[in-house]
Image (cartoon, rainbow, N blue to C red):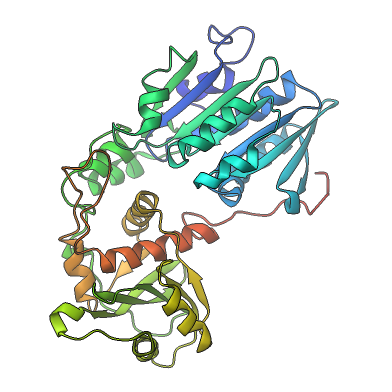
Length: 417
C-alpha cells in the first residue's frame, strides 16, 4: 500500500523515533479526499494497541453511523490483514480490539449536537479520535478532550476547513503549538489514491469558497452564491423509463413559501423530477396543512413514495401527513453540513435537478452567503427549495448512500474476526 509523505508522518508521529512523539495531540485538516481520515484511523488503532492494554478509547464523529462509515469501513479490513481481531457490540456502540495479546475497548460516539457532551461525560479514556471535529459543538470536543486523563493519552482530530472565524480553527489550529499539538495540513495531492484526472476534475468543477475549502484546504471566508458552481447546463430533462424508488422533500411555509420536491432514483442517482412551490404572499392566500397534504398527493401522482423528508419544525404538517399514512422523516436541519453534503452530491452527479423544477433552478442563482455576518451564515431569502434539497441530501448522507454507501459489514454481533 502506497502512502504519501504526510500520510507517513501521521502514521508514525507517536513512534519512539519520531521528533513529535511528545506531542499530546495531532490535527489533520485540509482538502476533502486527501486521505487524512484513513491514515489517521490506521495510526490511531496502531498507537492504541501498541501503547495500552485494557484501556478505553473514544471514536467520535457527527454520529456513530458516520464513524462506522467514514473511519471503520476503511481501516478495519486493513487492520484485520495485519492481525487485529475485532468484536463489535452494535447495541452498545462499542468495538473490542485484540492484537498481540492486548485488548482494548473503543466506544463510538456521535457528537453532532449540544447534548452529546453528556454521553461522554464521566468516562476515563486513554485517547480519543474526533473525525469531522469542526462539525461538532465546542462543548462536546472539550468534554472529550477532558476525558483523556490516562497517563500517555493523546487526542486525534481530523476535519475539513470551515470559515476563519470558526472556534476550532481559532482555538486548536491556530494554537496548535501552544496546545502541544502537531498540525498536518493536507491537500488533495497528498492522497496517492487520487488520479490526475480526478484532481483536475475537482479543480475544474469547484469555484469560490468551495474550491478554496474542498480543494485547497483553506479556512476561507464564504462569499457570493452558496452553490456558485451550479449553472443551467447542469439541469437535465427527466429521464425516460421507470424509476426504482420515489421520495419527497418538503420545506414548510405558511407565510413563507412552501416547497416540495419529488425525487426518483435510477441506480445511484436521484433526480428531482417535479416540484410544488407555493408563495402565499404572491398568491394572496395561505393554505392549510390539509391542503398541503392534498398538494403532496397530487405531486406524487399515485407513485409509491418510500419517504417524505420534512422540515423538522413543521410538527403540525408532519402530523397531518402521518394521519394520512405517509412515511414521514424529520429532516436534519444542520445548515452548513447540509450545504457541504448537497454541494458534493450535486458535483458528483448523485443529485440531478430536472428542467420542470423552475423555482429550484431560480433559487440556485439567488441563494447567497451573508457577507455581513460573522462566520458562515446564509441570507434567509430565496432558500425554500434550497432548504428541502439540503434536507434530502442530508437524509442520503445519514443512511449511507452518500459517496459509496455503508461498505461491507464484517462480522456479527459479538463475533471476533
